[in-house]
Image 1 (cartoon, rainbow, N blue to C red):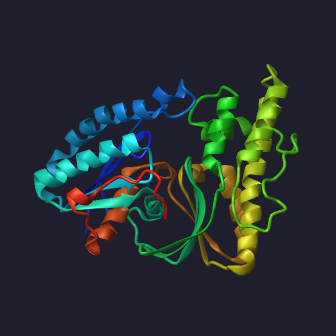
Image 2 (cartoon, rainbow, N blue to C red):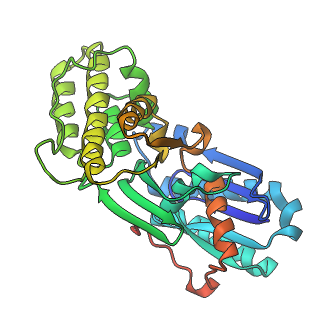
Length: 327
């Protein structure tokens, strides 16, 4: 079995995955959403302190698996430096005490493999990653062949939801809060400009849209009823930006398999719009289970199973965190 640890941001998670069957034997995640919500976003130092409390508590629940562990995997990149350290330090201690190899996992690759928890992989496919920290389009042929073909020039899709929620004083995380608020709103009430709509580039940008929403919120003032329309219009344009750029991508690329991964892939409006986009192209849409969209240790463990088979280990003294690493 493999023990996997995830602490890249504000979720403390540990999983146990069977190497042969890929079955998930244990998975627990402790969220920090309540603690960070009063600040409207993640406070790194607070997150690190909460990881230091939560991870040992979860680890104590899996001690029965220790004799059968063949490796320990941990998210080493990208993420918040102070929170990555918590998981990596624990992983190193486990590797030394049990004399088992260490596997350093890229968090973004983990999101790709969230599609295959307790399943076999099915590459090649094009993958759109939408999370709080990243928005990028990738062509994935295998674990060793992942090419990024487009990414955000500034804010990410998920980050923009968090920031809009903060502007409205809704709390954190912003994704589900804005999605719920938008449900009863008019998506055409505010004529926000689609980012990069005249640019031939296949790239993403949310800073301009975020600023337009800020002005609309300021104009609305204390009339919070207008927030529903603002949220709906924002969600519509934020998603339309993605689908317009994907249309450009599909003009020269015709993937048979297309996936959306990352925490923001749980957005049902986004899922529906991309499903409509794929229909004329005959591409199959792949989605993670909703419980595995956000950060979790199960996806880290699933990557680690394949890395273990390929003997992709990292010496303990060579493992360092890489907060700004990418694919």
